[in-house]
Length: 245
Image (tube, rainbow, N blue to C red):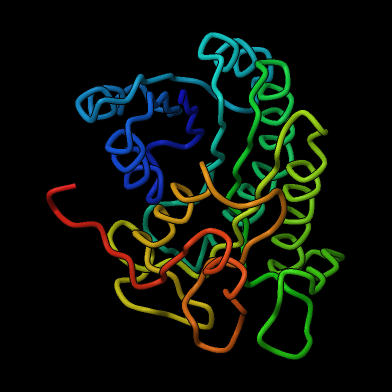
């Protein structure tokens, strides 16, 4: 299958694209930075430089590929955690979830994609009994606090993906707090942790498994239930990428 990965040079994207290629898929991947094109090409990815805020350019890029599946792994966060600039980074990332997702969904629809898989969060639930199931509500998103800004972006992303129309199967992967190489944490940090390798594998599984809807993707620490992802996707939070892959 032809797969378009938006955000191919992010922490998850860099691990996901080799998995997709090893599974026999033709992979196109986006980056905003032309300097990252050689690395994408060396890994076997058809590299595309595009700004997802430029709706026309994004539409043209997706239309040229005509993908069967679009995978949304876009984020706008600094590589190094900096508490002093966290609030601004969260604001920018929320804008990406709102505007970038809207543009990507529109481009996928026009290009005739049949499935759209998107990265969301498993730690944006409203307060309530744990473990949270996928049917539990996301926080309101009201206010200017970082948590509210994040929840607002998550709500917009999920509504856009799940409402992308009957012609596209929308799948939302609610990822836990990432840790591992090229993330903000080397080891689990906070509730609902998730190794970046397991996050990549979940997206690979969603290419050919699962029904449209929402899946919690995290480790079993009692914060969220991953029973649905285990059953329908075959998700394994202990998955790690071997160096030979």
